[in-house]
Amino acid sequence: MPDTVLVLNSGSSSIKFGLFDVSAAEPTLLCKGLLDEHEARPRLVVKGPAGEDLFETRREAPDADGSHLFADVLAFIEDRFADSVRAVGHRIVHGGSDYSGPVVLTDDITAKLEALTPLAPLHQPRCLAPVRAFAAIRPGLTQIACFDTAFHHGLAPPASRFAIPRRFEARGVRRYGFHGLSFEYVAGRLSEIAPELATRRTVIAHLGNGASLCALRDGRSIDTTMGLTPLDGLVMGTRCGTIDPGVLLYLQQHESMSVEEVQHLLYHESGLRGVSGTSADMRTLLASGESAAREAVDLFTFRAAQAVAMMATTLGGLDCLVFTGGIGEHAKEIRGAIGERLAWMGVRIDAASNDAARGRINGSDSAVEIFVIPTNEEMTIARHCAALIRGRHVT
Image 1 (tube, rainbow, N blue to C red):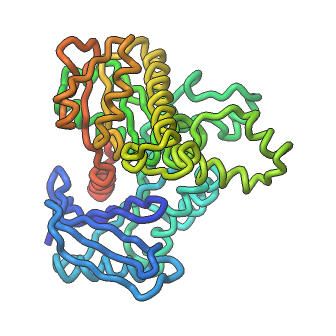
Image 2 (cartoon, rainbow, N blue to C red; image 1 turned 60 degrees about the horizontal axis):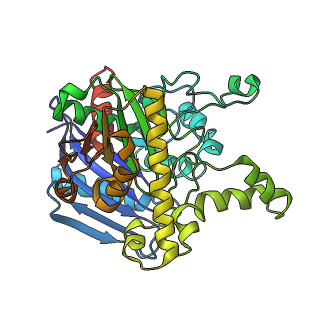
């Protein structure tokens, strides 16, 4: 019977999961799926490694914490694979200053992570809800937290610092960075695909509903576009990204908006949705003929290109640019537009390669190597969990 780890990747409206055999040196995907507890009839879908349908079920009504669906997942695994899961690995968005690598969750650690909710109010509760649910339905099951902030834990001043009084920095008000599980995976794949670039000046663009960039030297994060919270940086699906702090003061002082209203505006009503007035989905906006949709897309690529140049400043140049994430992997128009904005840096994207959207996509005359590399956060989590189960850490 193989050792297996169930990996959960909690999003804002659904939870992706994967079951991995971790008996060998490299985890092997056994099945993957989706838990959607926000539908009127919550749904569990399970597929095989190649995407073939294995199982689907619905509940008649939502339950308070989604625990029924989690119990359904465990029941399916035990029936299909005659196996009891060794551990559950969770993507936790914020690890704060204390956690630079994966940890086995205890009640005390979970409480400390809940205390970080103000730093990721949209994400942290969603990430921790399955932890509580599994603790209730399988109290003895090992649960492991893997942090989106951990990959950036080595950020140092000036990249990590805000220009506010130092007493706040001493209390943990600093730039942490996110999407670390994705950046870690893509950096590893880049070193496999193009080992000659592993130590070079690289920017990875994780572009999706949430979006950020990471500047890497020698495969390690030295700068990133998100800061204290996942609200900072690029324009996102419903999040504003970098904004003049005076706008927030204006909204409170002159529009009479409460803190809660401003928070909701910035996290849920801004970004692509706010500018277009119609949708947060890049596919919808690219297919639209509305001028507001085009303007939203234009702002997205404008800010992304600006941020690449900013990361290049940190690196002292740019040797490699990698696109990943839902938009980065699938929207050739976005890659092309960002490339055109960066032509002054010698960035040249080959149109045919960009259409194919896999591997190296730069033109022969490009001063920068450019790749599309699909991310796999679940694999990163599975590797960390396997390492902890074996009694050592992945570095």
